[in-house]
Length: 171
Image (cartoon, helix red, strand yellow):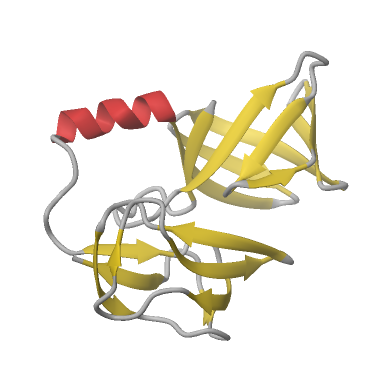
């Protein structure tokens, strides 16, 4: 099942990142975050869960009910929006599809810009790689969620960006 996770749930411009989760016949989980495989092991506890991600243990407590949930990990509370692929399709259908106004691609996480693949004036299609953001020693390829023409590039290779920071504006 594919999920779209927004780290800034109350910002309509927040660009969610994709998390694919599949349960294997062994009961283990196959997880991809932004298209990259991640080793994940999950143990449910009475007051939350313990998750091992690429060998690093994190104890989580989840508050609230999807799609808006609060997560407490290592003493830090964050709020996220988690929407399944099916729920997202239903939301888009209710809104009548994509808007025709300018669209801003935002960073799904804080990190460093490794590579910018487009320049002003370039035409992009859905799924085209726009740039690469490095976060926590992982390179994350940011792809176009909609087709359009690059109106403005807000970052350059080597720059740091905050979560939900403007990356590229398409029209």
